[in-house]
Amino acid sequence: MNTSLSRILCASAAAALLIAPATLSAQSKAKPQDSSSGTLSTSASLSHKVIPNYAASEVYASIKIEAREFVSEARSPLNIALVIDRSGSMAGDKIAQARQAAARLVDTLGPKDRLSIITYSSDVEVMVTSLPVTEENKTTFHKAISGLTPDGFTYLSGGFDKGCDMVSNTIQEGSINRVILMSDGQANRGVTSISALERKAQTCLDKGVSLTTIGLGLDYNEALMAQMARAGAGNYHFVEDERSMARVFESEAKGLTTTVAKNAKLVIDLAPGVEMLKLHGYKYRAKGNTVTVPLSEFVSKQRKEILMRLSVSAQKSGARPIVSMRLKYKDLLNSRDVSNKLALSTSVSADEQVVKKNVEKKVIAHAQKVEVADTMERAMVEYEKGNQKQAAKMLEEQRSSMNAVRSTYDFEDDDSFGRVEGELSSMEKEVEQTAPSSAKGKKLRKSKRKRSYDIANDSLAF
Image 1: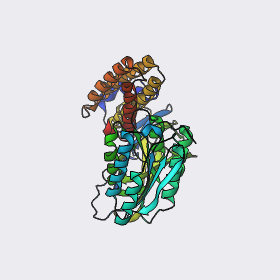
Image 2 (image 1 turned 180 degrees about the vertical axis):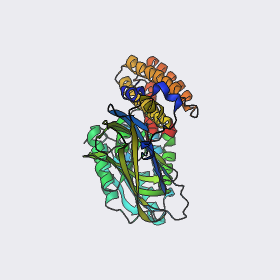
Image 3 (image 1 turned 60 degrees about the vertical axis):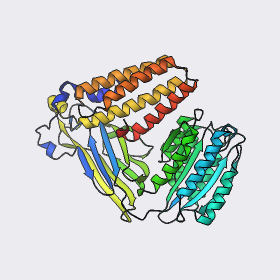
C-alpha cells in the first residue's frame, strides 16, 4: 500500500465500517464538506471529519468541479492553431490521414471562428496564417492542406511556439483560444526536454491559450505529450490508428463549441499549520500558503477533479480550519465573471474512537483511484526502462492494496473497483510477458499512461 495512504488510513481502519457522525459540540462548527452551484458546480470534502488533538494528521481534500450542460443557441468564437508534425516518419497513410483530418476540421468551423495551420519538421512553416473561417477562406485552407508533404526531423518546440504566438496575437473578445498539437515521433530539434516544454505550455496558458496534444501511433513520447497537455490545461489524446485522427480533430473542435466557462482557476489558501504534501490531477503554482490551479475552459458536462494530500498540525480543541478556496471563472452562459468561495474545516478530539469513526469513505475511494492511476504511470516508467519484474511487482502490490482498502471501507456502491482489479491483473501479466520495445509493448505503455491521465483528472474514468 502507498505509504502516504497507509498513514492516513491507519488511524481509522479498525472501525471503518462504523462510519457515522460523532457527537461533538465542536463538530457543529466544523465544515468537512462544502459546495457551490452555478454554471460550474463545486463540491469539496475532507477525508477526516475529526482529527486527533494529540498528533499531527494527514488528510485528503477532494475537490470536484462539474460544468452545466450547454443549452445556448449562441456559442463563443473559436481561435485555433492546428500544429501538425510533417516529419519524415509521417510518410504514407499518416500524412494522407493528417490532410483529411485537417480538411474536416476546416469544414467544422464557421465564419466567427479563426484558424491557422502550422506544420513542423526540421523547420516550421506557417501554411495559413490566422484567418476567419469564411467560405472564401476555406478554399485557401483546403489548398494549403492538400500540399502538406512529409520530410525531415521533429522540431516540435518551434511548431508549438509559432502556434501559441498565432493564437495569442489574434484573441478576440470572448473567444476560446486553443493550440492543437499533433506528433507521431520524438522531439529531436530545438527544445526537447519535457520540463522545458511544460514551461512553454504554462507560459502559453498565461497568455490565455490552452493546449491539446494528440499522439499518433506507437513511437511518440507519451510522457511529453501528456505533461504538456496537463501544463496547458487542455486535453491529451492517444490515436493508435491514423484513420481515427480526423474524428479526434473534429471532436476536439466540436467540444470547444460547447464551452460554458473559461479562464477558470482554483485559488486555494492553506490555513496556518497546514502544509500541502501533494496535489494530484493538475499543474499548480504555489506561493506562500496559496496554491493556484489553472483549469482553463470547461465544456458541456465536463468534470475536473483535484485531490490534495495535506499535513495538519495538532490543535487542542475546537473546529480546525484546513483550506479556503475561490473558484474564479468567466461564465459564458450568463456573460459574467464568477468567484465562488468554499471552506473546509474539521473537528478536533482526544477520543481515538471518535477519530476512527469519522472518516468520509467517498474521499478515501477517490484517493484510492488516484493511487491506482499513479501506480499505472510509475509502472509504465519502469516498464519502458526494461524493468519488467519491478513494474509487475508494483502492479501486484497495488492490486493487493486496493482490495484491502476496498474491503475495509466497503465500497459496495462502486463496482468499478472489481473491474479495475481485473485490469491490473491483466496488465501485470502483459508487463511480464511482453517486450517493452515490441509494438504490443509500446501500445500497452501508451494506452495505460493515457488511462492514468484520465483517471487522475476525473475519477469517473476509473
